[in-house]
Amino acid sequence: MASVLVVEDDQFVRSALIRHLTEAAHTVRSVGTALEALREVAHFRFDVVILDLGLPDLDGSEALKMLRGITDVPVIVATARDDETEIVRLLNDGADDYLTKPFSVEHLSARMAAVLRRARSSAGEPPPPPQIRVGGLAIDPLRRQAELDGVRLDLTRREFDLLAFLAGRPGVVVARRELLAEVWQQSYGDDQTIDVHLSWLRRKLGETAARPRYLHTLRGVGVKLEPPGPGETPGPGR
Ligand code: CA
Image (spheres, protein in one colour):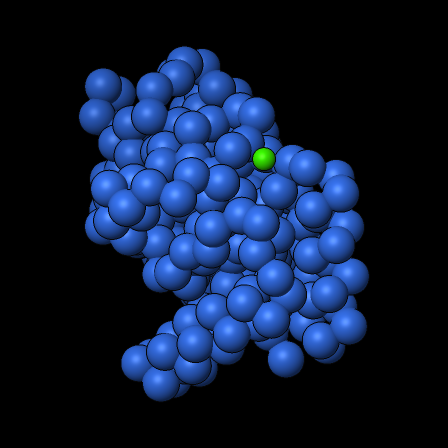
């Protein structure tokens, strides 16, 4: 039926939700913190997220805003606070619906059905992300696979995300701050993190910072990915 992400730190509530949703033929993944939830939605496609607002790592409304920064998946917030001002604020922050704890299985099913119906009728089934091709690079975001000149690249999750993000905007200079926000989901951080991942990625692409082919660093500005020009030599071993 639907693929559901359950974000709930209470083991008891979490297992009850998983059991109920699985019995109702939904596919369920579950995590116990907001940061894990962000990672999940960045890497998998869900039809709906059930988000507990009392999580150990982030305030619920912060978690909701961060989720909204990376996905428009329908979110049902589950709150223990039956406070109208709070609920209005959450709906304004991008929640699609809410449940007040404790809630019954019937109540949850009804809310989920309504949210799914709305999402499906407004958007239709979203199309899968298209393959990205830049020069000899082919990236399949759905299967999380990348090839260079027909050879499969063995990338870590982060390297893949970085490559896919840059290849999705060929020729566009992406600022480091934007990379941190989009690939690392951090609003601030260390430039070195990016440099290190870029250098690993370069090595796998068979190029160096001094002799770039696809990945071009513009000092003090950012990074861009573009296809090598016709006169440029192929990387070693390719
Ligand atoms: Ca909780």
